[in-house]
Amino acid sequence: MTEISTKPYLMRAIYEWCGDNGYTPYLAVIVDSSTQVPMQFVRDGQIVLNISHGATKGLKMDNDAIRFGARFGGVAREVYIPVENVIAIYASENGQGMAFEAPDLEARKNTPRAEAPSLHAVPADSKASAELDSPDENPDPPKGGGKPTLTRIK
Image 1 (cartoon, rainbow, N blue to C red):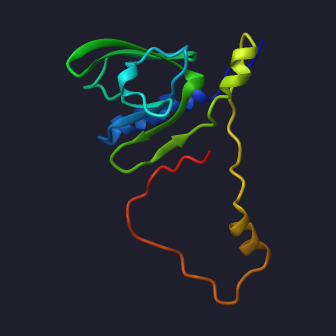
Image 2: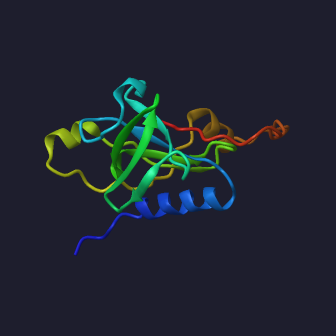
């Protein structure tokens, strides 16, 4: 038996956490031929959707896909998103949430079913790793203040 990805479980947990704290859950999605979203709202092959209880009708987050009805510009539409196309789920109010590795769309075109997505550590950029290798005697103090935000690293 193949192991089920942890991604849909983590997405449902962040969604529930947002609801428990009164936050609005947003979903960032890579759009391809397997997604069903209103194309007029897609920018650079991506779309960000409000998936709060008030913004959706019949939201269902399965292990393979997310389905719901929503209004876009006053027009009711059905939305279908494969779990592997989700690149982030986060609270719009503070940016806290979880980002996922973007799917390899070229590999999926050439194979019937792509390997399940997995989480990986983000490699440090060259400047940060250089600072770690040779510590400064007077390092800059950490920057503070402001709201936390979700940063997607490609």
